[in-house]
Image 1 (cartoon, helix red, strand yellow):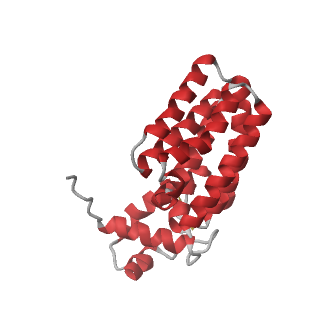
Image 2 (tube, rainbow, N blue to C red):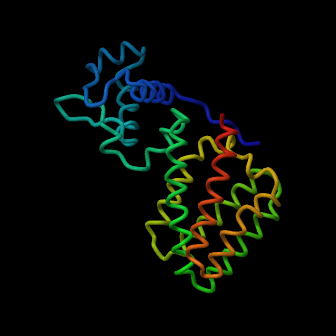
Image 3 (cartoon, rainbow, N blue to C red):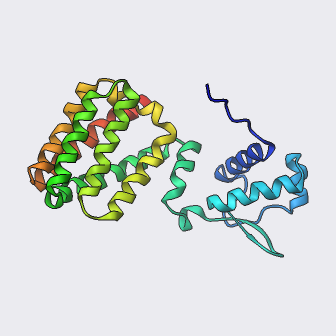
Length: 228
C-alpha cells in the first residue's frame, strides 16, 4: 500500500490562507496585513508564511510587490480556467456553472466532430464507446466515458476544444466521486452515449448536436442529484 502524504505546516497554512481569501476574509484587491502581524496571527514563522505565499502566488490568488506588500488578486476578473479545480474544491456550487459550460461546449464539439472527423477518428470513437460498456465499476466507466469526450474534442481538429474539454473535466475531478451515479451501470452509460457517437460517425452534425445536448443534460441532472 502507498503511504498517505503527511501535511506540513506550510500545507496547513496554505489551505487556511486560501480558504480565508476565497471566503472573503482577506478582500479581493486589498493588501494583506504586514508579514510579521500575519505570521503572529496564524502562529507560524515568517519563513513558513513566505513559502505559503509563494504557492498562492503561483495559484493566482496573490501577487507580491517588493517594498509594497502582498495583494489579494482579483482572480475572477484576471484569473484563468486553471483556477476552477481549486474553486470547486472550495465551493461545490461552482460545479453548476461548470456544467452549464460543459453542456453548451459539448454540443458544439459533437457537431463539429461530425463534420471534421477522419475515418481513423471515427474508429477511435467507436472503440472508446465500446470501452464504456466493457469497463468494470463506476469509476472505470466514468473514466472511459471521459475518454470518449476527449476523442470527440480531438475529432474537431481544433486544439482549443481539446484544452477546454480537459479544463472542464479537471474542474470537477475534485468532486468526481460524488458524480459517479450515471456510470454505475456500464450498459446504461453506454446506451446514453451511443446516440452521440453514432451521429458523429455518421457525419450528421445537427443530429450530433441534439444527441450531445440530450446526453449532457441527462447526465448533468443525475450527477447534480447525487451531489445534492
